[in-house]
Length: 485
Ligand code: FAD
Image (cartoon, rainbow, N blue to C red):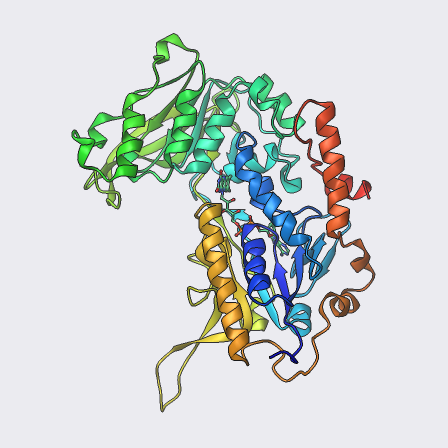
């Protein structure tokens, strides 16, 4: 009602999920006081550190996020991570328990900060094998990946394992003309290494076939359009002879794959291929340097129904070896539980890598029944919500993340209006928010980066970029970001 105090909402994470959910709540409950906690001094999550530098139009959502952040009832708290430290430099860690004491509602939207592993021999012992997450973080200036220095001088064959859009981003960055990349916001250290790169052939390898691929047409088309990069003809037997009857999206994708490039691999020094039906078995070292990867052995697989997008796949018993001077593992991202989850009664579904929730973003826990009612039931954890990759798992683009964050925002509003489902049920005054959390965390709270201070970092990055003829030159160390202030 008009006399009750406004909701105090803490948002953990400043990617699309956090911003879109916050904006939804702010538009439906205009007085809501929002504090957004972000572990890095800089906002926007994977829009800044994931989306490829040659996709600047995808980053336009940052303008919308800037408008949301400009509202007087919104506060950005960069360089403050929740539950566990995100980076080593001078920064502040707020316990989740402190947020739960000082807000009505806490929204977890901290994304997926780790990657899935293959779990095969050589993966963690041989050099020259990188996760796509780290490689992407390296060329996009994610502080924890700034020191990666992938070695692109070992030879001409790169293997990218996985067939999603991230795998194609990696392939494109490896093959693209560096003079095109030079005008983007790709980091200078990455440009220098890519300019020296000896990689000429990129094998995008997958357990299944083109009909089962997760990548989308835009990304395939971009690779086909790279000047002087040829595509090895796709394995025709894995695509239906008559593609006219396929659903539209799939038909168009198959058309692009079948058309390939006008350049043939013999006419060009640079090429890429889709190597289907290969499941990685182990990595092999070089004869002259046994600690460096030289090749990958794969199990050859068989698709039970090659044209069915959900086809099962089995090993045939045969194997195949691909030369692999450098390997990128691109089999998915992974969210992690915060250390305080158990204590706070939050269940983490480790298999799916998500916070257990009702599908609309209400965090739930399973409660075992008693003698009267022996059923296990899912119970809402009052006042706690999740959104984005942490809610659905690490798939989907910004548009789908937005839809999903709106659904969580609606659940928050609905629960608030129906009364009772929040963290501080008895109070008559608004809880303390950041001012109260500051008391809990002590002196390090002064290192929080406000939105105005982020705008100063932003301006400094842009002016560094302009001197180099590009949109922006990111700071890749948190200490450098903070030294602007
Ligand atoms: P994130 O964007 O990951 O945001 C999470 C935020 O939480 C981060 O800022 C992180 O620093 C912060 N955080 C983490 N832990 C804590 C903590 N403990 N305390 C406080 N803060 C914390 N989508 C497109 O539409 N187009 C594209 O071209 C595209 N390209 C992509 C390329 C790559 C390589 C990847 C990985 C994704 C791409 N996506 C693209 C997908 C898009 O980036 C995601 O859908 C979206 O970013 C997910 O949003 P999120 O808010 O859930 O997570």
